[in-house]
Amino acid sequence: MMRKIHILLAVQSLVAVLVSVNRLGTWTLAYVLPNEFLRWVDFNNMLVLPLISLVAFYLLKKTLEYDSPQ
Image (tube, rainbow, N blue to C red; front, side):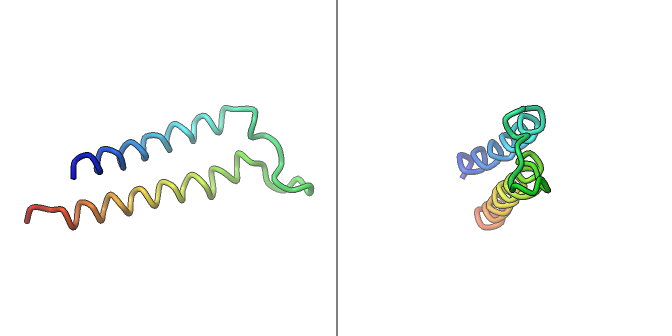
């Protein structure tokens, strides 16, 4: 149980680091579509990284609920 909790918390920490790297990196400054409405950095910060974080949080919550000793 503790191993799973540690992995899920590590995923949350990795997402925090990826948000910083994504914002500071120059490789995500290109545009997603030719109309130049949305950049990859914004797309990652609004969709990809929050979804990863939400899934990790949900799994952590379920792990703590069902593996509780009570």
